[in-house]
Length: 262
Image (tube, rainbow, N blue to C red; front, top):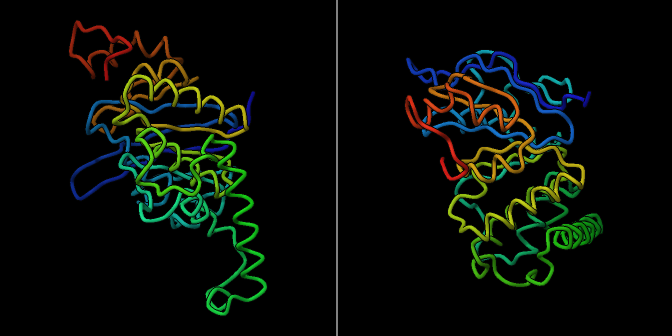
């Protein structure tokens, strides 16, 4: 059995009297692609924020490689080996493609603020290493031809890919994608599916939130389903697709989930 690299134990998130996430247990094994789905307001992004340190769970704990990371800051979790993207693209549009990727490497650099101001030998060495790593990531993601273009000039699908490339630049073991197919057309979504599968072949473990059922059913090995903050189902894609509780959560009693449903 594959090693569990990420685990949530009875994670609960309350905001006042609202229980946004209710005692969730979850596992991601090394090398897996796992999806989290559910209707709007199900608690998916809140759970993501608990994992990545945006929120501290009210109860429960998050384990990364058996280390308790509950309550750590996002930059600390990134430094440990987890990187995420967001539903709304967050690129630096006045920077070039390669500069955006180099920004993602700040947690791995040895130069401090004084080194940067004085442009010390340590800073220059760090910059050279960052550029080399950025070029490597751009090659892996198929963005090398665009490296000196501004991020804003890229087509939407490539902007999504650039955001993933920037996450890869942090040298993570786990990539977390928050609705990576949001706003994409059918061809862009197909390209994204192929790209995510290629990331798995590179050795990344991947956790994603997604509304596009075609993407989820085609690339995820296991799926967790949330509804009103509760975990209502988990299992293989075909099992999830036929689960009465999942169908009711999405479509109501008597519905049938197809690949186009979200």
